[in-house]
Image (cartoon, rainbow, N blue to C red; front, side):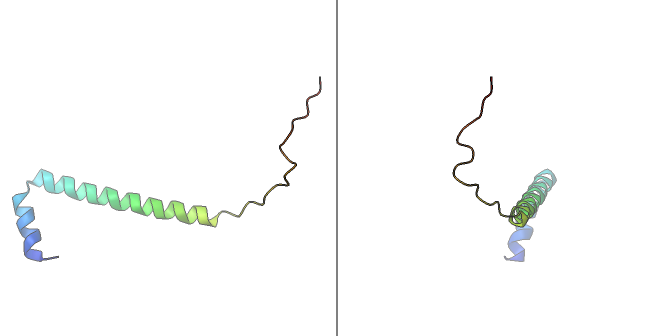
Length: 63
């Protein structure tokens, strides 16, 4: 990225626009970090063993 293009861009933007752009960039980074953390937590979960095929096929009802 060319430094002169960044300085030209920031001089063309108002301070409010610069603040909003910075806030948006920080929010996107925070969302990315949370997504990475969630993926790590999901990977850390133990694998669930499959139940035998006969479990859960019927319900015993006593009247």
